[in-house]
Length: 244
Image (tube, rainbow, N blue to C red):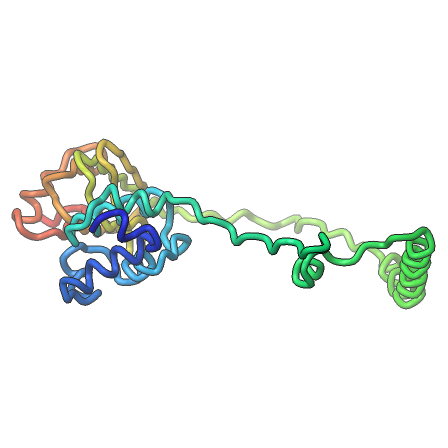
């Protein structure tokens, strides 16, 4: 698609048109790109604040554009294109602003008398509030303080359970989509840029889903994990620690 045809379109419009041109549904795109449906909807609707970070936006735009066969540079240029603010209404022939412009400007005092009247009204309001809530303020001040002392025979109860902390580190050789959770709690989902390193610590079992295990270096407690071998080459799910 030439740039002259998309000057009035946004990045999301171009992506949506590319998907509809190939008669693809959102569900089909989710299966083939491993990008969640809510993120694909946000990309096509230009709802950039629905994505976690700027790196997620750029990574998903590249991945989705490549999948749809659309120029990545074209989509990124539209994404970075500044939004033009609406033009202000011009003054009429006599030099006065339009009624809409006047309503946005608001009202300001134009004489000393108006300023004095505003000050007197403010003082009257403060005086009324003081008399309305003054009694309650005095009562709150008169409330005595109660000092709490620790019990003499109190003992500090500590847990003797020892929790083993696990650590996982992932290094990406190229842009790769991953989804990592710990004890069913989502820790990360998105594009891990090339040469980027991510590290997490916690307890329990980690579940790692990858778009391409061969593009990642995975370390469990500083020990390398052969992700392609552990996932048998074709699967994309990996559970750590490995079950022997």
